[in-house]
Structure formats: C-alpha cells, structure tokens
Length: 235
Image 1 (cartoon, one colour):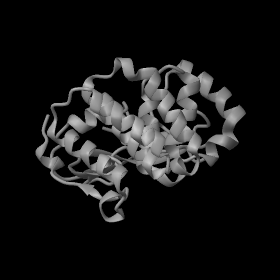
Image 2 (cartoon, helix red, strand yellow):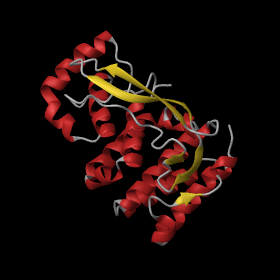
Image 3 (spheres, rainbow, N blue to C red):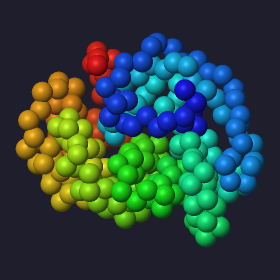
Image 4 (cartoon, one colour):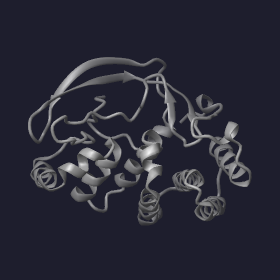
C-alpha cells in the first residue's frame, strides 16, 4: 500500500482494523500528475496501532499512519490516484490557488483541492480530521477550520453508522475544548450521548472527553495523552 495513497484509508475503517505487528517500508518514487516533478516516498507493508491519543490520533509502529507525499514544485498532496479529468481540473486549481495551497499544511491543502474536485465527497470530513490529528497547531490556530469540520459533519451525518457518528461528535467536542469553545464541546458531547453505543473503547474515549469538559487536567487531557488498551479492540 503506497503511502502517497493508492486509495485513501478513511479514519473509521482504520479504527476498526487490527494491523499486523511491526512497521516495514520500501523506498519508491512517483512523478507528480501536474508539473511532472519526481517525488520520493515509502511504501508501507505493515503497521501496528499501539494506542490512540486524546485527539484519537493513532500512535503506531510506522509514524504518521496517514502520511502522504507532496509535489515539491506546486504543493499538490498526493491524496488519491488522480483521473485524467482530475488532472485537467488540478491544472486550473493550481494555476489559480498555488500560493494558497503551498502555504497550507498537507491535509488542509488536500481538503482545499478535494473540495474543488468533488464538493460533496464524504472524504472531505476525513481530511479535516487528519489535519486535526497531524497538523493540530495549524488546524486550531484558525477557528474557521473547526467550523468547516462541523459543517462537513452536518452534511454527512445522515450517512454515518452509530459508531462513526458518535466518534466524530466526540472528536469535534475535543477539538472544541482545545479551541476554548465550550458551547460546541457541550453540544457535541450531548449529541454523542443521544445515540445508542455498544463499544467499550468508544465509551471509554467519550467518558474521557466528558471528564475533560467538566474539569481540564493537562496530565489527563492534553492532545498527546494516550488512551489505553486500544490494541485489545479488534475488528
């Protein structure tokens, strides 16, 4: 599975998977679909999830699980295999927005481009969550990104199963806490409790975020604090 993504692994299916132990890599390269620059990347053949952080970011044997390569000359993130139709649109988008795209971290740049290519795609929500996980400083620096995340949740919540809906609501609540937005934190925690839940690990995570909403303790609530026992939760 190429790290630059032969296909994108969405965050819920990743949560439910139980990868093989160890993290092994092979160097590879690819030409950018626009501009033709060569990009070096690593293909990963295996990866282990050890635990999740309070943001629900996976902590693994292979570093950032959702790492993707990026074209050096125009900032294009290789978040999918682009079709010929995509490439035509990408050329136009990069001609118009190259400066903006180059200035954004990789997952926010992916969101910016993907929204132009497929405005209603459910993947847009995942790209924003990946940004919160791996680019948290940039994501939280601008409150508008949390609002964009909430808007994407509203657009796609009807298509989510119960576990994904609760999980996204809890992640939004936690992101809101980090952004000192207690109104939305309380709102999304209440929404998460309205849906029936039969998953011990998600219940633990939701309870931890609720506890942090009541009283913030940096030692228990900071974004890099681990949630225990994920490795026992199997598909």
